[in-house]
Length: 227
View 1 (cartoon, rainbow, N blue to C red):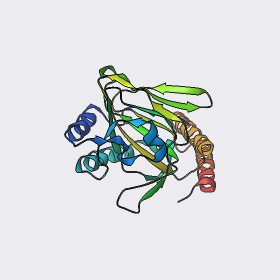
View 2 (cartoon, rainbow, N blue to C red; view 1 turned 90 degrees about the horizontal axis):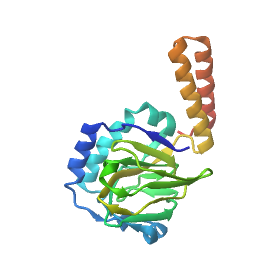
View 3 (cartoon, helix red, strand yellow; view 1 turned 90 degrees about the vertical axis):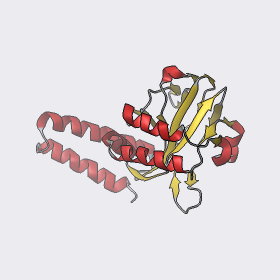
């Protein structure tokens, strides 16, 4: 499932994050690349253990915790600390697949990458190119979202960032280990959850069918979840 989550950060949140990361010390993006990625990647990145990435990452994590849509879609168990990248002057990231496991540098914290996430931090009119292209069974889906919007998609997908030929594309990116490993199972739970919420809005939380379907949701989650 690929899902856009609008306004994870509002304008003030985006401005706050940008004020932190724009003042940071950027480095070659291949500092955190695996072998395959390093062959395809040309961009800049904030050091993951640097003060700017940590401070801005806390803002992103707080926003994720306040987003019912993100929680319903990702069912997060662990979230890799957000990283930040910048593309300009022809920078691009060729087609690749993310590593199955990411280990946070200097620690034993590791995440199975069930989901990849990109949080756009620049107005799409401010740069040319830079679309995030994700390949799925429907073909290649090109996405370029407004600043503050998040794209969530299976980390197993082949994906790329098209060359940025004018301006600068700035984003946060990270990975999620879900309580539910299987993408199809997560999609079923997400669709069921959204339907329950719609019925509850019409009939009320105490409606017998809402209660019954909520029980079905939690029983399915109980069958599929790791904790």
